[in-house]
Length: 498
Image (cartoon, rainbow, N blue to C red; front, side, top):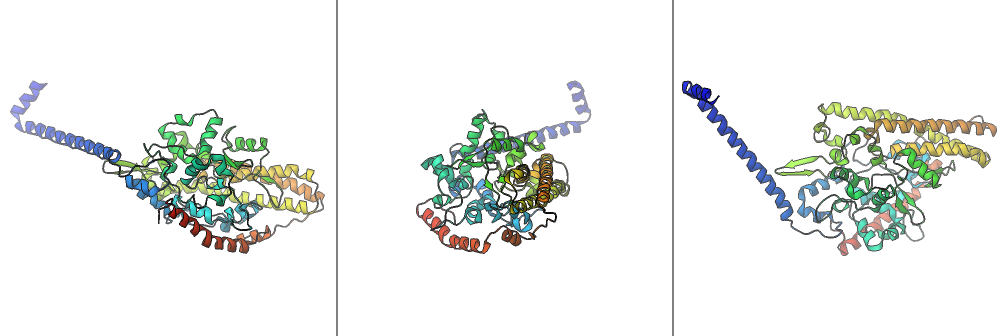
């Protein structure tokens, strides 16, 4: 073969020059590749070898971590932005009760009936939990509505305080007890080991849930950890016992039915509904549990793959820490796997959401009607034993509704499962109404009329909330107490952000 090539070159010297040129170009390109690899390795090595400051212990101040990791820090700062709106929510402030007033009736007797707003970015976590009416107005003569457990997912100051005072002691304190301690919003120390920067679990609830299932969370793979650090908070949980110990109800499984069975066996209720007198369950935000039942999780994707897409900058590849809807930047999220247009991909998501929310809206109307029918029966003097079946159906219906709607992104994460859960909720809502119609008929009530709950204000007035008083007290408290908390934290060096 080489003899033939040599003969060809002697006959046509231009062939030799072509071969020479191709070889030289190939060598040049290989040299560029080698230099690039060397440069990238040098950049990465520099990151680890030339840290500006040493992060030790539980350091909740993300601005100090940002000195060593400015790329990640600068994207994390963007969680403060409120400039994205999709067809259904986004990262802007939005009063959910205003748009869906039936929810006020569904949560009658519970703090969520006072105030429920759409979630914003992680930078707003402390502000949102402090300003909401759900945490009450601590002060002289006014009891705290919530325990310190409500701080658990809001700040890297939480593991610091758990280390200082003990886990149980932390949970059982009044919420306002740690107002001057829990001041830094969700940040670096919530998910990263300061020495290695590896992902780590900082909340005991998840570790304890794994242990009760006979699983060792330390054996999780790096890819699994990219979801588990989110699962520290984006899950269903409840406050167990007098100590209000944060507990995941996963002992019998992580489906809506398995967790319902857990609560039923424990005879647990978050509150008794003030209208229907039903012992109720309040779902928190079972994002992780529903995500596991969807197609993306089953194909090995993690939460971070879509909500924290990778960014390349020179020789550095890092995760974008502006954790938010993937619809904000489809080219870096969905299109890394799906070869389709942005408009098509966005519309696929909207189609999933629209179908689920159509059922959701119907449930909210029928379930609120069931609660009010039950109230009518009580007002007419029904015997308690006759209400047992109807109240059980109301409890089951609302648990399923809440499980689906409290989960951020459920209608996309697992659209089939979400619609199944909502369909079962609607079924039980209608069955509850049938039971209550029989009861009302036996009490001589043949003409049931729904009250006017067409707005948030009307619904809150109907269930007996004095919103003017609640809002006035809270506003005054926000003006006086929160600034004092921050001033104390700054004076003690526990809070340094502007």
